[in-house]
Image 1 (tube, rainbow, N blue to C red):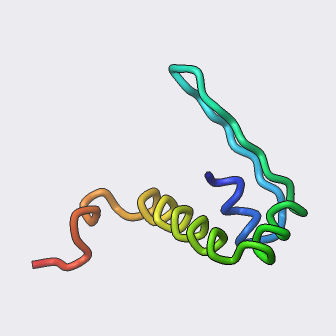
Image 2 (cartoon, rainbow, N blue to C red):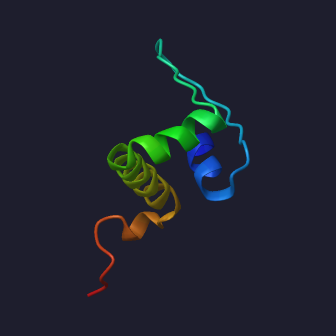
Length: 72
C-alpha cells in the first residue's frame, strides 16, 4: 500500500518492491483515478486513508510500542 499512500501524501508516484510466496492479485489506480475517487466517493476515500494510515503507523511504530502507547 505504500505507493498509494505516497501519492496521497505527496501527489507524486512511488514505487515498491514486492515479493510473494503465493499467487497474488494486484490492483493499480492512476493519479487521475485517485483524484476522481476522492471527489466522487469521499466516504470510500476516508476509509482508504484510514487503512493506509494504520498500515503506515504499524510499520513505523517501534516494535516494543505495538501493544500500547502508554508506558507503565
